[in-house]
Image (cartoon, rainbow, N blue to C red):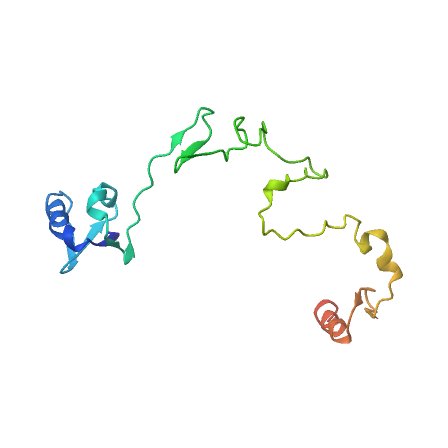
Length: 170
């Protein structure tokens, strides 16, 4: 049976014990002020009895307040502010209807100036030119140590020796 060890706050020890004794499922004590609550019963523990408690050695973190759905029906309100994380939300502050993005192979849209914080370090754009291997420049570059069996180039003799031992050993 999986149990969760709960050590109530000192002022709530007596109320927690009264709650524990009233349960049909048996609760055991694991110390003078610690209870072994069955995992299946833990969600039924009143939250006011868990405030200030240690749960499995960690401070109990209360449940967040229920999030209120906004008019769009997809997003919610948190800490008094509207949060629009849903990609299909039509009420977001950016005024974007639908997912933001690009088709495969197409460039992504530019970010607005306010998207970067005041201390942001802007990076240079990436070079979109194909890699040297795709241009055929790899054939033009001299191979340091080609394999005599398969013509695969290697940068060092050690790499070539390891390749031959693994791939071409009889």
